[in-house]
Amino acid sequence: MSQAGRAFENELLREALNASRIGMCVIDEAQLVIVFSRDFAERLQVRPDLAIGRPVRELFSGPILVDRLQELLSMDKDEVATECRIRADDGRDAILLLQARTLDRGEDGRFRVLTLVDITDFGITRDNYMVLRRQLDALNTAMVVVDVRKSGQPIVYVNRRFEQITGYSAEEAVGRNCKFLQGDDTDQPEIDKLRRAVELRQSCHVVLRNYRKDGSLFHNELLISPVTDDQGEVTHFVGLQREVTRRSAPEAGWVDRG
Image (cartoon, rainbow, N blue to C red; front, side, top):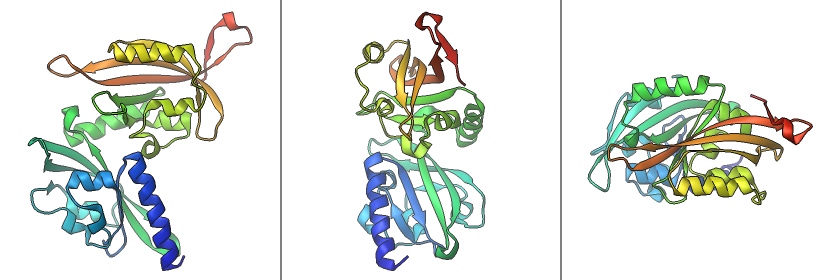
């Protein structure tokens, strides 16, 4: 691919990442930044337009404390997860989980993809987070966590089973409201029931018509439960999902497809 073609491709990717609020940074073999999302920039307090083309190490300087930076940036390392601490705008110390893996593009070279997850409000360490993530990924039930304190109530976590059922990767789902799975099929009584439960901060059990990334329909049995902080305020909802399908007779109920 020509240099102009690659620049255009990178610009499209960057705009897509900015729209989806995914914290992502891509570096080349010279450890220069070639893709830098707005969310990544905001977390590290760096202007996005000044990040492209810079050595990535310059972004992790000053008040930012990063464990295992050498491993994080090494093209020869397998997937690495490490912790980054930074002073947030409100004066608190934010805890960010940085994960990195190498992408081999053959003749185009190798690239290191860095993704970022804010785990400050989870109240857990990096190691505990990684153990929890492996446990959740092992579940045969899809799981999604939504932050109801943020505008749009975005998804902040999905496990591997969610990816398998919906066809959407975690990178494609995180930052979006769960309603994207409904597509244009919004005339469903169960949606109103779900919306009321979230507004009242209550648990709820519904079955929805949802759509995979390829457009195919599946029936999603969803159970949501609120999660509270130390003051009793609801901060997140956890949703457990199973793919189900109707029997031939409606009164026969539902069959688990998981």
